[in-house]
Length: 334
Figure (cartoon, helix red, strand yellow):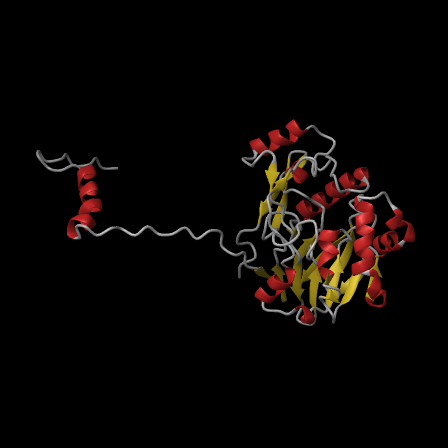
């Protein structure tokens, strides 16, 4: 690099010239007060859309709130300090986080398929901070009446709470798809007799209200089962007895919609062996995470993670004996 020419004696410095330029408007318009731009607050979150072969995929944010965690939601069997240390090393708040709640629409060109139905009015994140699905579907250019298939990864309230609004079906023209083991478990009469204030009892009550009444339109699937052409169920048991992920493929492009195989994009992947608070079978949940993450990393397949940060699309990379979430950037751009 060539050296800067020496300043002429008596010439103003660059700093002085800059200061003069900044002061010029006031000199040209003496007495005029400069209006301060008002702060506008957070911008609304819009749906995120990309192509998968001939399919069109849209992720929808159903809720956004900072909550306590990630311990014990992730790392229930660890100390709070150990989880906090991981957050600190990852430049994240140590005791607060904002999970995604991300239903996904797949338009195959023949059918409009919705994966999971969000919180509804009184879900895990109630209104006004959650239960946005219908509005997000409208923002994506659709109406709930256009949804042909509602696919449910499992029956927790933040996935089936949005099926019914004020006693009315939100998706009146849709058929429902859920794992056979999941449906059988929550349909058992003794589930509602579980301990008061337990997650099991609360889930059974929501299931009885939001899904059981439409049993004649429910298809129960098993791992490997086809939902519609190009979409198949994948075993992901442990979080609940019949929890499923879903493989979406068209024109050689692949996507894994993995439901609740992660509750935090850092902690869950860095330590898949850590117990998750909401897993009903802790050991099987951990084994499922390792298997699903390994598959996603090996196949270099795009993923929609329901609880990862919106737009909740990314990839999984091996990192030593663990894994790392890589958010989508422009990999799906055309």
